Length: 215
View 1 (cartoon, rainbow, N blue to C red):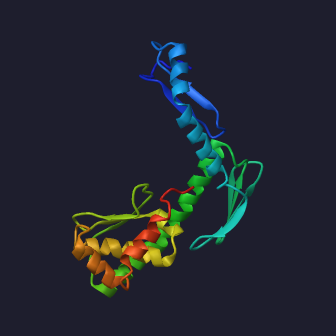
View 2 (view 1 turned 180 degrees about the vertical axis):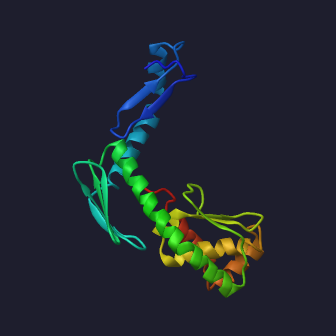
View 3 (view 1 turned 120 degrees about the vertical axis):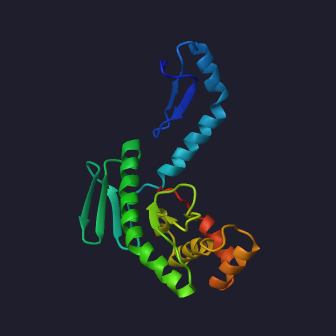
């Protein structure tokens, strides 16, 4: 499809694995087709990723820190809440709209739980080990589990709610150590080791096995 706003050829693989190509008016259909042919490897890889991702969305029941989540097929995308039980109905498990709906609902659940759990827990650890911090913020960050600014403002990823409690504590301690040591040098790891029963590197490796993405 020609697009007046396009400045170059763009290929998009949609959740149903169909391939959509947009290109500027000054590019011929033949040139666009040749570009697609050259991109077959990338397209196939994206389609395979979609197939893998689809398998992650299925009828299931699982527990978060504070809720029991039940995901099942219904006639429309809809969520019902009964105290700590949440039912998420999806019209299907393949469409982009259902996937986005599920992601938004889960992010909302994790955000609520993170705000309930993380601030009191990091305050407890700070008091126990003699750390001081300024402000705590909860974000949906795709790049890291947490960060500590030069002013000792700590940002925590709401996706931490997917981690076991031991790994959550590790991330909180990691950021608390940064209130005193602003790098990842030997002194930083030595202090973090003291706080984690000399398991800092091991726990760090375990955290990396989890994804900061919701789905």
